[in-house]
Amino acid sequence: MTHPAPAPSTDTRAPLVFGGLPEAEGFARVPITPRDRVHFRADREIPLARLRADLPDGVTVSHDEGEGLYRVDGPCGQGGVLADWLRAWCATHGATTVGLRAEADVRRRAPRDLPPAFLEDLCRHYMPVSLKRLQRNMSTIRLHLPDPDDLTQQVAEWILKAVGQYDETKGVPFGAFLATQLSKWVHDLGRNAHGRTAADTENRQQKAIAAFQAEHQRRPTERELAAYMGQSVATLRRNSQTVATLNGLRNLQSLDGTPDATEVLLPDSDEAPDQIMDEAEQTLLSHALTAACAPDPTAARGQRAAQPNVLGWATWYLTTWGGQTKTQVSADLGTSVRNMNVHADRVERALKDRLAELSE
Image (cartoon, rainbow, N blue to C red; front, side):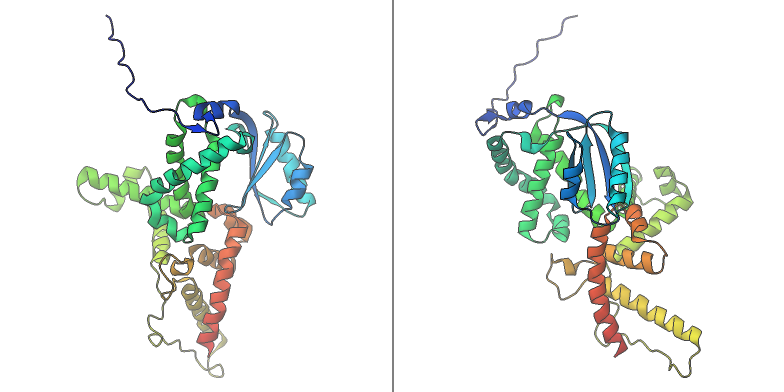
C-alpha cells in the first residue's frame, strides 16, 4: 500500500530574525543543557552576594523574591552533595533551610549567555505579543499587579524565564511555548498570594464541578462530586471548607457595614468575671483582625487595598491562635516567609487603627 506524498507546506512566513540571527539559530548557539538543581527557601533572608562568592566553580544561584525561592544549579550528579553543602552554609550564616530538595537532570539555559543583540530584540518583539496574549487574564493580573510598570516588568521577567526553559530540540516554536507558560504563571500569581493549597484546591473543585455539569446538566451532590474527583466525602468536606474560607475572605466587606452599624459592647471590668473578659477580648481581637484584612471600600479598583488580605489573615491567625511558626505556615502554604511578612505588616498597620477605634 502506497501513501500519498505529503502536501507541500503552505507556511510562507519568513523566520523571525533577532539581532541579525534567525530565531532558531540564536537558540541553537546556546543549547539548553542538563544540570542538577537544588530548590530551597530559608527562614530569613540570606546574603545572596556572599553565597554567590562561596559557591563552588560552575555552580550558579538565582532568587525569586516573590516566592522567596532559591535555585542553585550545578553539574549533573552533584545534586545531593550540593544540597548538603547549602544546608551547612545556611546554618553557618544563621539561617535554616525550608523545603530543600535536589532535582536531577533539569534542562535550562542562562539567558545572559545568548548574544546580547539577539536577546534584546527577542524581548522587544515578544513583549507586546505577551501583553496581547494576557488580555484575557487582565482582571486576574490587576488584582496582583495594579501598576502598569509592575506588569511590564513582570512580563519581561516571564519572557526571560521562558528563554531559560525553552528546549529548541522539541520542535515547538518559542512563541507557542511562551504562550503556554504565561497561562501557567498567571495562575501562579493567585497561588503565591493566597497559598498554593487553597488556590489549587479551589481550581480543581471548580473544574470538576464544571465538567460534571457539562456531562449531567446539573450540579453534583456532595457524594457525586467526591466520587467524580476520586476523593472520600470527608476529604471533599475538608477541602470545601478551605475553598469556602478563601471565598469568604475574598468577598469580605467590613464587618461594620456603615460607621454606626455595629457596636461592640464590653462588660464593665469591675463587674465581669475574668473568663467573660477573656471571651470579650477574643471577640474584639477576632473582629478587629477580620476587619483589618477586609477590602477597603474607599480604595480605587485595582489597588491592593481594594482586595482582601488573605495571606495576611492566615499568617496572623495561624501564628497567633494556631500555634504554628511562620516557617511551618510558609511550608504549608507554599509561599515565602518574606511574602508572609509583607502581608502581615499590612494587617498590623490596619489592626492598630482598628483597635484604636474600637477601644475609644
